[in-house]
Amino acid sequence: MISNDLQDKIKQCDAFQHELWSYRPLSPETLMSLKEYYRIGTTYSSNAIEGNSLTESETKVVIENGLTIEGKPLRDIYEAVGHAKAYDYLYELNREEPITEEIICNIHKFFYQQIDADKAGVFRKVPVFISGSRYAVAPVSEISKRVRQLVQWYNNNENKLHPVILAAELHKRFVFIHPFIDGNGRVARLLMNLSLMRNDYNIAIIPAVTRAEYIEVLEKAHNNDEVFTSFIADRIMMTQLEILRLFREIEPEPQKVDFEKLLLDTIISNPGLNAPSLSKRLGRSLRTTQRYLKKLSDKKLIIFKGVAKNGGYFGV
Image 1 (cartoon, rainbow, N blue to C red):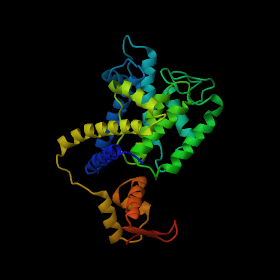
Image 2: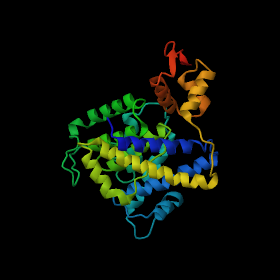
Image 3: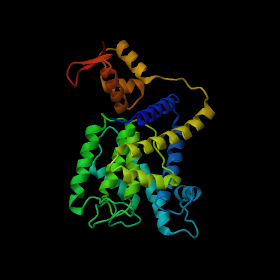
Image 4: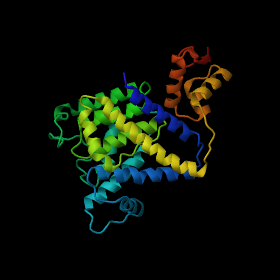
């Protein structure tokens, strides 16, 4: 059972997400500019949390122009380039396919390839310790098993948990395993955002100025999941508000869409459609559609008739 405070935050995240949806469809040019906007923002902030010395403008020059920055460590340059490649990889994935161990290793490989090719995408062979933490990460002998368990847990729960809770939990569980020799925090944040993207949700940027709080709530998450989930919900809201501010300047009053009502009306008007058909018709991801179908089913407003492959939804 989650607290009222977290429930309120999740409702606010959903409200902002619905407002973002109301600006759809976006032009290919707008979609590309958003992708590039987040590419710089996530790369800069995620690296800065780990001590990378590049500023946001320097990160942009390195990624977009391929230039080095005088006086900056070469590793900082490699981290910027590598993170951008890992970010791009997220967009190449089929979001309807399950997350796999290979995907996790590939994310790390893209990020770490120029830093240490031999260790890129490879689980660590030595013990590591997290400075400032009282808790041990997975022992070497347990890493492969725990990553497999993480992947299984995620794929089993993707259509059951709210996107905010799912993404925060994936981030936390991955960090507690710490499967790679380095770069685990950045991979965790990329996985968190992959989870949000897969579920038709806005990504989250964790600013470097929140680093101390971020580390603190991660440590507390060993005993209290909610404090970390609440932190991630705040970061999602702040990122949503940032992009909404830009959208509102372009189109102050978009058409508001209540997706739950729209979905119900579509089922009543077109009885017998299944989840993939409804997803395609309404322009939402399959997982988003399935999540709202569950809400309507729980409210006993719709019912599924027939077998899984050939059945469909009907109004009650």
